[in-house]
Image (tube, rainbow, N blue to C red; front, side):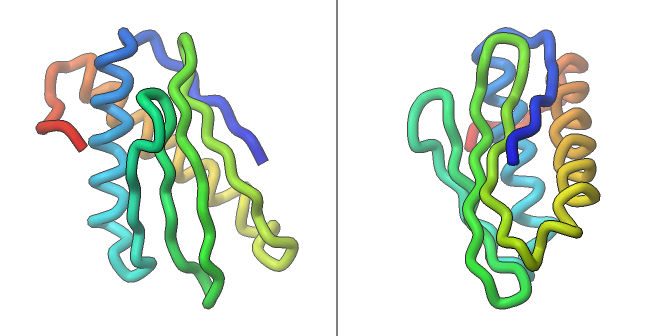
Length: 107
């Protein structure tokens, strides 16, 4: 599964917004044991556990978009649409906060 989340931020500001979104998401969904790290300058890995399954997704920064990628197991696919919508909403919220100059420190 791949999903594009458009933005009009500079590369540095987009990375800061994505980092803030990831930190916030990890805190909010602590029960899923979320861990995240930048694996390259433009790609973050996010790992978590859902229903006993360890999953990994990626948020990649491209020109004008954040791309969310994840291989979703067959049994969890019915939840992928609503989960993707929530992820987009969360990232968009942090993109707007970046535009408004309201970002905390780096990830």
